Length: 217
Image (cartoon, rainbow, N blue to C red; front, top):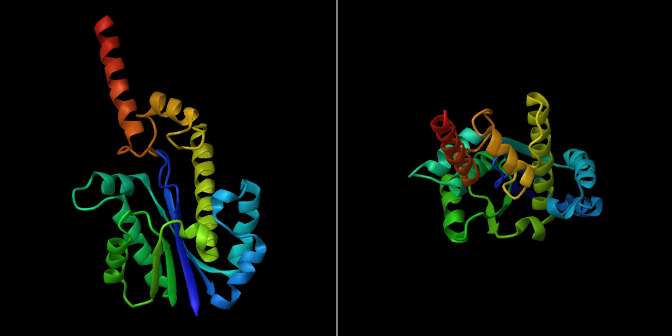
């Protein structure tokens, strides 16, 4: 039986893409991933993740999608969909590409049953579908997908910093360096998620500042 795990990295940042990965292998080989040290990416150091990133690719077949800020904003600001359904839609595309026998998904929604049913309706075939919270901690194959997604997301962030010659920290709203960068540069770069409160606040404050400066003149 071919089993697969689906996981994302970069759901929360105000900067850069969200990366989703489906990783799959023969169920009989899953123990090899565990023996490598594969687990939820958040429980590993960057060096450990980077090493496992290449080892996992030797054992697993995988598909990856990089969801850019514009697509994320469109989903968040839409009346018809949201970030959870966007993630579900991309999960469907990844699953339909490789068609594993069993798929385990880390569920972003509080309503697991609704999320599972939404995906099942859109699939081209009927795999065994396991949808759970904290699946990246419970299942090694989902941990493998989380590592691939996290490292790929980190690579994308490095590319953005190199391309634009800037340092915006981690890109997360909890990072003071990121917040300071957004506040100063909200209107200068194309890699912001403009639907995020952090960016909206920066735009509002920036607009007020410019108005104040205009009045002083």
